[in-house]
Image (cartoon, rainbow, N blue to C red):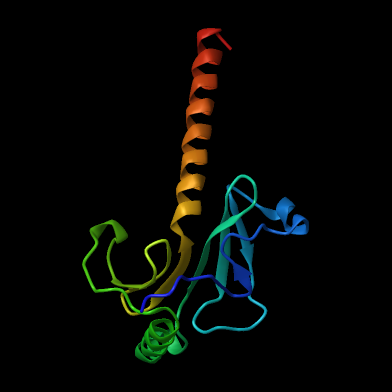
Amino acid sequence: NLKPVVGAFGWKLGDKLPGQFRSQVHDGSYAFRPEKETQPFDNCELEITEDGRIYCIKATGYPPDNGEDSDTCKNALLSLLSEKYGRRPQGRDFSFGSGDNYFFGSDDQTAHLNIFERNLFTLEYCDKNLQSIAYDEQEAKRKKDEAEKKAALSKGL
């Protein structure tokens, strides 16, 4: 009963970032504040492809009262995300670093909740196909920049 994750915080995965926000994009990311307060998250950003499509929506924050509300926040988020998208089988994936990791949604459109030391909450909604495109674009840009740098060095610039 896993359902694709379509969006969060008023944004939809795959939509193009509106033109009026493009000037605020830095290194493929656009920082925003959600219109509606959503505890414990207060820092949010979109990651976009070169043509402006949203492939990842990230939110981070700390629970109120210096972590005293950590378990309450965790349980509420687990319940909400499980009900909305379906919780994926638990498995330790070391590529996600330390902390408690929970995964929701389909293979291609997922939500990942990470809780580090009961205090730092990170929630990522991601379209894996668009993410792959973005990573390929970033790698191509890196290789191009590297080739240009080598060419400039060989010319003695």
